[in-house]
Image 1 (cartoon, rainbow, N blue to C red):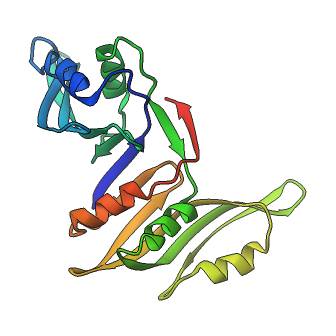
Image 2: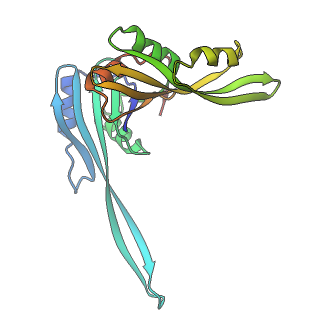
Image 3: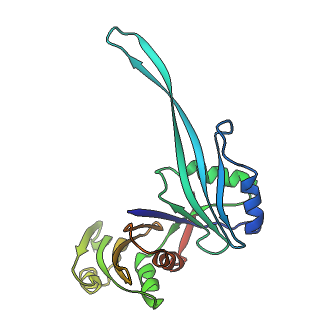
Length: 229
């Protein structure tokens, strides 16, 4: 599946100026990390960030002789930087994005704050459906923090062959709760596709989801809360 992570940031410079600063910090083995740009427009930059990771590994042979060797790997993050919200899209990101975030802040002379998102997946799904470009329904939903009684909460998930929102509403019964994630079935001219939306602003989508549907998912991301990474 394709994976996406969305973040927000307030750029202190224009997108073309940001592109120039990224170009001034290209990747090389000597530098250890850097950027390559694949596409630059007035409002959007698409590119990749590479980070060289060197780890010294030690192994012992059956006679107790220890050898040390250097293991070199590379972290690779494909990104889309935009003038409008969400300003940062990461594509198939690794588990840790700290190196990318720190390097981006350094390029911007630490005048930008990259923030993680806390969103309501239901609002996100509503935005996708209300755009009128595709049809879809919520096939699965994961809910936690459902107040049962004092100091007792419940967590549950629903799966259906049709929209599960009415059933979820009956179970929650107006009690406090949190929607952690949901899976939408979205119909496009190429067929039906699964798109998972999470409360942390991330997406998992079938490999065959068309680019226009992915753009709709991105553009429908609601503005809720942000916190510094």
